[in-house]
Image 1 (cartoon, rainbow, N blue to C red):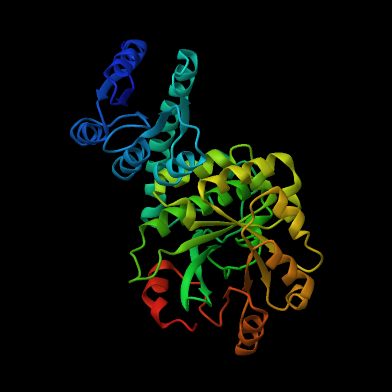
Image 2 (cartoon, rainbow, N blue to C red):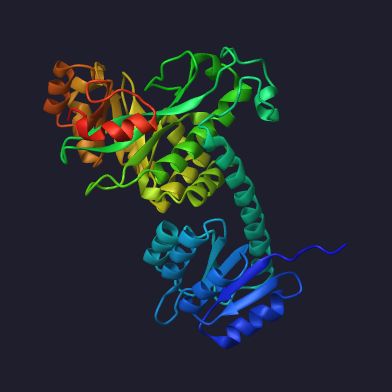
Length: 397
């Protein structure tokens, strides 16, 4: 029995490099070549899907980062790799933000390195296809699972007492005081009998206490929120909405966290700059694996916000470890009236958001502090996407 070889598209304006790569790869892969970005796009649109696209960076007419950004738009499940002799940070950032590149390969690339990276890229492609099919089924009817679900990870622990119902996402608007618009939404998990809560954990209590359910649910909340928000229509002349998702220390410690987030961004097509991760346990930032993971996703353009309760927040120390861009505190917290907090936040260049604003008095108080944004029932309650999108223009700002 023969095994179908993965299809690989090589794009470079140097025919000698294309010929060399083809000789190296043809035994293991179905190799197709193109002599530039324009031809590469034509091949991509006219032939069967490719598992992997490898592009040179410096090409006349259309550079590799621009080409891969277009590949991402037209074939989001195809894994993208950039072959470059350049080392500029700006090149890497643009390729990550626009093309969501899976690997950067030095030019010339040693055969063993190319072989290993291609195996990983093909595996990523297969995972993206499988996960895309799974997410499509999940989001078709906006259900996560029945409480009697069959997924091994979800049934390994005690039965979750949800009354036989379903989990689904609701969203709460976050208003920006400077622009006078809704700038973002926070994703919240809602059970059949429970109101969503803006505080951690972002799901009903019965699920929060079930370890077998908590981590898969948290992964799904992030993936489903990105998938849904990416599909929402543009709201007039306003910038596209960002989505805020709370992250526990357990999620950040997960060794698959960065890969999961990368797959989520690739599958959804959501730009990294439209994702805000709210870190619920700021102390976890001091752990080396967490710090590395947060620095990695921040380099893609993802925003990082620390959620503070009452007590001392070592903002300057955390900001030195990871590129935190925001701070979120709860209306009524003692931190709201702490001058030291505002001095530290200003010194670290953090945007401060207040959540839990429920009255005009709360609104006047948070505006007086100089915070940049806020959320709460005073501006708009948590609701499903159809209701939210229909009423955004009528919200109190």
